[in-house]
Length: 264
Image (cartoon, rainbow, N blue to C red; front, side, top):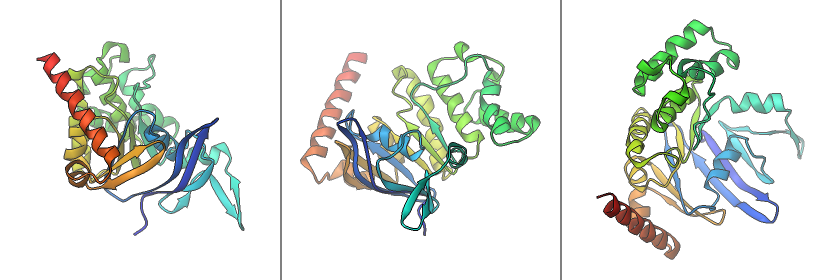
């Protein structure tokens, strides 16, 4: 079966810094892939490249077998026009660290804007579906409020509803809880657990190790722009094969314990 998302030998550099170094990864229909690793390891760059927010320097990315960002002419790859790239990008949604809600729109309009303006749905249909999605993330009663009137966790749940409103093939999450106060994290993770249970295809970059162990079908550990280990979470967390992953998990566990002791 063709993977929903395929990355093949992807490279990406920013000046002299190699952000992605020969990355190959498959994401299958209904799979939850969680990407972990230290800051600067290339996790966010990987999903930004998948969503064509960054252009790759080498390799290829495919969505349902369709080459993204280019078309083939014989042996040559011809870059697509921005309009064609935008059409491909509409088949995926991304939830960012900083919510990226439009401050001058109500919650309801934030969720309906893309379905109406980009996907051509009627406003009445888009609003009906948006209210259902807001109910799903526990925020239907906030539909007429503005982002500034919501907590960070509520804003991120609106951002998830907005991502779902376009009926994406894949949802990409870029550290969706990293900007939240600790007490707000669980509400967002609860919504994401629900999406995973429904069989949504998801790629999640996160530092939430407990979430990764519980929800992921497969975990990917990255370091210095490369995939170091990949496999079921019970393998990566229970029997890491490399010293680098063992060290990362040990430091993370120590940090989590220290944080819990300070809070208590």
